[in-house]
Length: 278
Image (cartoon, rainbow, N blue to C red; front, side, top):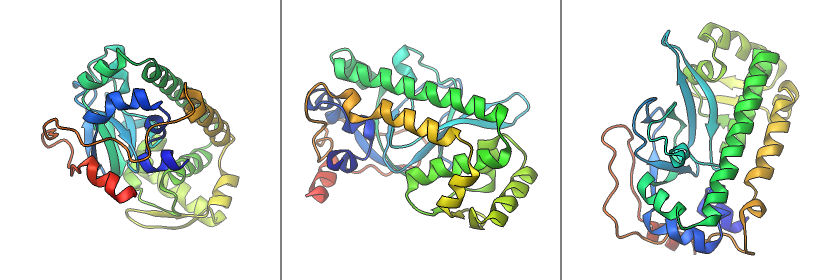
């Protein structure tokens, strides 16, 4: 757990050291702002992201202009990993919904490491399974459960990542997660406030009561969380008794990262990350 938390991303932390070392020189830690668009549907995938504290939503852009979130990725996984299937264009739009930090690497560097790493290939396969589980459960949940129960599930998922009762979520984000209009969001939030599951809601944040939120959520939350935890557990990835080194990636000698004006990011040297971990 110590190694996992110091790296910040469970998928990276679970890699055996030899496999992690193939990625380490090319990883950069950056800060992502809320609402930053990492890649749009149909665009080339320019970076693969391994979130630490950031939360990234995968969004389907519908012909009528409506955007619907299909899943969210936090410190358990990666965004852009579908490029390993040689799908160089993103099938969905990836948007930062909770600001925070992430490791990033270019697809070319990642593919080069993947070609020489059985452990990394296993990690990619497990992550694909994790995504499939999420897509399956969310599709079933959307068809079978009430908007109120689904909102409670989404809020619990965000709470798992944030670890704080105040969730930095806007009305627009909730509308996107649920695939409903803002008027419906307002109604459902009011119902959860009446039950005590939501203590307060402001323009850009929601304060929740987790025990009551768990009561309001459908069973999909517990089932999905349990399955994903088993899939992304370090034991599922390790071929040796150790995960990645606790200090995270060593400083890379590659050039600085740039991505136009899609993402407002502040690049920090991994060496500084290591010095703070001691």
